[in-house]
Amino acid sequence: MKLTVIGCGYLGATHAACMAELGHDVLGVDVDAAKVARLQAGEVPFFEPGLSDILRRNLDAGRLRFTTDHHAAAEHASIHFIGVGTPQEARGHRADLSAVYAAIDTLVPTLRGRHLLIGKSTVPVGTCAELAQRIAVLRAPGADAELSWSPEFLREGFAVEDTLRPDRLVLGTGPRPAAAEGADEPLAGAVLREIYREILEAGVPFIETDWATAELVKVSANAFLATKISFINAMSELCEIAGADVDALADAIGRDPRIGRRFLNAGLGFGGGCLPKDIRALVARAEDIGAPRSVGFLREVDSINMRRRAAAVQLVTEALGGEVLGRNIAVLGTAFKPESDDVRDSPALAVAGRLALDGALVTVFDPQAMANSRRLQPSLGYARSARHACERADVVVVATEWAEFVHMTPEELTPVVRERRIVDLRRCLDPGMWRAAGWDHRALGGVVTD
Ligand code: UGA
Image 1: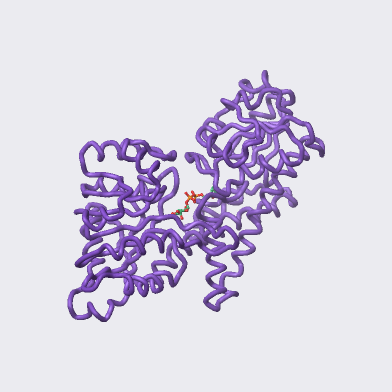
Image 2: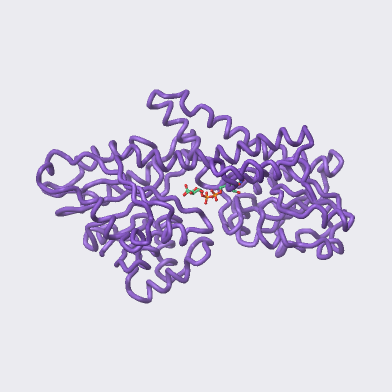
């Protein structure tokens, strides 16, 4: 099938490449000429395991192209996915929908005949209803642009797997506009079934619903995940005072299938371009639509999460005897999670930045996020390896649980550090091993059982 994907950032580029992988003829459209040039040359502009193979294979097969020419979208296909970014507003907690509106404003007037628009971006509840009114005004006489929303649940680091083997597909459709009533059946359900035929045949559930529910499914899924993480981090605050082990607690409660062990890892908390901004945008939207109390608890979820960063700085400061000024601190990991080069709202980079503000000489290393970190925090020291970052360190801080840090041994670091101190902000190290080698080991969230 012929498809376009409007917006070729993280979500759009992944979606475009994966749709081509399913055999469709895909045109990716983006306003950023540099991004388009890189994608067209087979280069993924961000770190995502497995994506560049799929991108190159489908470019070579002629099933995938990228362009900045927005007129090309209407010429290429009658099915258009919208995958533009919806970041947090610069001044406030609402989602900034300007890229969604820009995509609609540019695309819709160029459409002739019958087209289907399928939104994939994360948007506040009520957005489709607002967009539909705009589409009705913008569309050319006689043209029909049916709007539906199919939220995306992919995780960074697993984007290809999550797109090609999702847990579920969700589609929200709206009432048909009066002009089209009685004329044709809505397209969205049948078209999506055809696009995802291979995936659906593998048994993936397909949940068809209305616009508002589809919009809410996405943000409530992220709100639930954020709540789960903050729940275990709140427990870790109690564990720390009570001398209990939060990992054993998570293992024990996670055995209950109603609870589940995933997303119960205590530590530095959540960051990235999705969970933090999505819970804030949900609180803001709930207030806007007259339900301020319904998700008020998400403010507490956010606040527990932000407290982890302060607690991490305090733990490192304590490890250094109460003063960081002039001390050498190696921070291993700046990405918001492993297998990602993303530093948006990264707890790891925030902690490194705070320690530097407090007067420490902070040197960081991350396997993938160095360039992005340097852009946000140019004044930190940047080392070319974990070992180099640890040279003459008074304390080594593990802030993102990349496998190479988890598997590090005291034998590798003991010869280079000034003091044998390690602070594990992700509770991912084996304390027995470090202590046996004479290191002072501390973990955020209290005791770790050997
Ligand atoms: C998240 C959701 O997991 C995806 O389903 C969703 O599609 C995506 O947002 C989105 O809205 O686009 P992502 O931001 O890639 O995906 O990252 P997660 O794997 O969810 O991790 C989020 C943060 O939580 C990371 O900082 C991670 O370190 C932290 N985390 C995760 C914990 O602190 N503890 C845990 O147990 C799990």
